[in-house]
Image 1 (cartoon, rainbow, N blue to C red):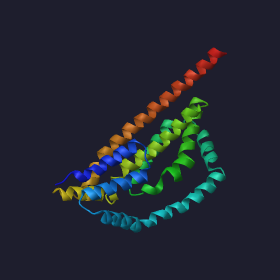
Image 2: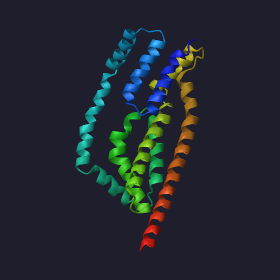
Image 3: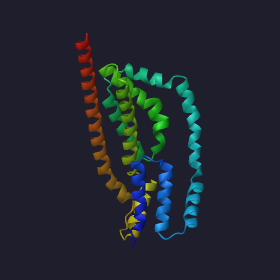
Image 4: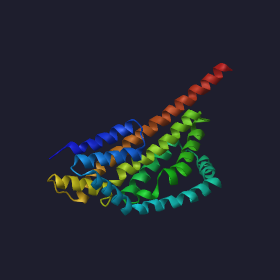
Length: 233
């Protein structure tokens, strides 16, 4: 068995580490893998074109973006913030841990598009997390606000990434099954899905711990800022 095609993985890692355009990185990695796998250039391009043509329905999801834009124009983010501000005891950490669990469970059931950055994180989750953090710790600095938004986006990523592999009909599970089968290890998609559950549980507790640690750092930052203002006075 030739391991040269695995260089495509290295191309992806290096490209993402250097923050190149993700689409360009994936295309270059695909071409590299195809050429090292023994295909000629035209065959690789043909495979890429076929994959794009077979999945062109994916562009239908862009139709939802104007709807989200209209909702934001008429105050969706403000309503989300007001809702959280009215809930006693709501904290940024608890809110994002709940969303993490929700994202993992729904992804595990195959509903991976029920959340996401454009349709859920930006208009709802991030503003609610900001409001909860300000309720608990007072006015945040611009840097801390950006960190809260980043944590909201990261929570969606972790929940989806480690939840979707539990759903045995997802493309990633079928890809893993194909790789194992070609290497002489016949496994069913259900067997692979079951072994994804411990990983998802670990991801929930690890990222949940990160969220609560970040909550504590926000509290310390706010306390330090108030003490500094008192000293100046």
